[in-house]
Image: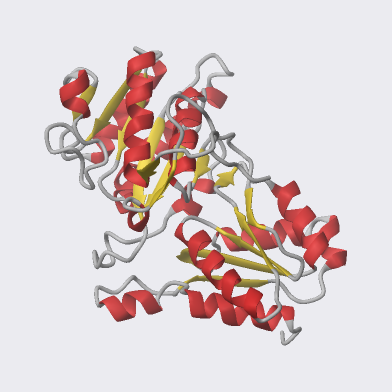
Length: 337
């Protein structure tokens, strides 16, 4: 499926502006919604995504939390249990490691452990990924960690349109939803309709149709895959680019249908390759009817087996870039693997 904004000439917003607009709509329309996080008030958030919302909605709805991810996440889980709908912002996705008790042992499990008597309508936002020179403790892609946990939904919007629509869908969801926002995407602009709309959780998007190789990508890798696909077209290779965008639940039927058409699969994600989301995609295809349609081994591109370097050239070398995607797709299409 392919989602597209409504209207002939929709206005353009940046990825960050689209997120902020979604939060403003939710705050305006639902009194149960509140924002929580470190420095999201007057400062506007570590990446200025929350912006001036504290001035528009007040400190009772846009709340600065102490510098304790574990404590803040615990308060957010407790607030959700009382019927509120907190949106908790981490300054960096890496800091989720400090709050894993509340995310994994509490938010993800309470509905199950209490026999469905409660829900946890909680959204957590994680600025993630490399490319800003923030070094090993502030540049990771940990989405596969959380996608491993039953009870959590995990999203990676790659466009401003999806950033707004998926956040609004997450706010309306009764279960905890984790949204990973790549830091390099915050300034990227794209068409975003005004008003309220949602992008369904659990559905991938075909960003570019093709017949020779399927490239399943996540987050910023979608844009690198599209750039690679444009170059491949000049060589007579048609790459189908699928934006996974929902890691859990995963839209396996869309992936299966695509691989049955192309016979080849390349998975591209920024997180470390070993045990990453590409491994789950590969297994899903290998266990499906699409396996019999494969004309070449499945290939995976992911992050290096090392902490992310500070040096900008080494940082680029540690995660997939367009030339690597091109090379892998060429080898698949030409049966060189």
